Length: 305
Image (cartoon, rainbow, N blue to C red; front, side):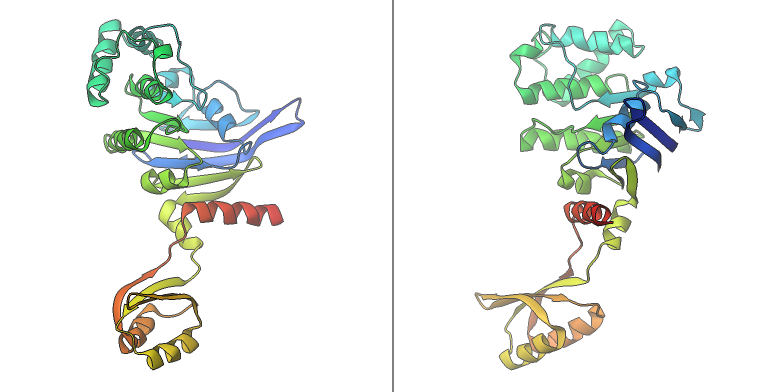
């Protein structure tokens, strides 16, 4: 659905590089996590995608067509720095922002009312943004972003300011939008949100892409063959033999339950066969690295090289 090819962007007459040969592809009806430390180049790419900035070189296509002003109406952008008018009523703002995206007044009102019902904002129409809490204002910004039914949605830190309950509400709506056919770019530092929402991820560091792929495949690349095991009714002597054989780590025992880890490249079926001789298996699972671990290890690896 979206393809960026060799995007380059510099500032200060070429002294500062924001993006260098940056490329990515995002499938239709999917959520892509755009990740990276502060200053990596993420916001620059999002601004280029929204035609706020122009790249120095490279090009972007949407559904096979070169990015052009006509695509402005097909993109919804929720920037990290929110853009609501504090002294203007919420209803007026939604109609105004809808008009900027090509909607007529009645169409914007109708769509806004639908979202107000979904997000329990029915009584907010005449309120001013200055009267709202940060979380409430975030909901309004979300509605502004999706109001014109865009096919490409860009969310930059969409959960900032939300309590856990409202964060879950917005998360569920983002998933529904994807299932309805929207293609979504999610830029966030909340790695738990990436794991819950994203189908693929792109990691940017110092203007370069350093990771790109499906979420689960990237996590698999960073697996360390760590297995977590919980046993009960353990035979002490057999456990000691097992521990010596597999060099177990972090051993704890509580309430007749023995817990430990194995850090080796081994056949899981062989481990299970040996464990059955030691005691009753409560749980046995491989530790899949979290995206937070992947993020840190990937950045550290690039920093060291």
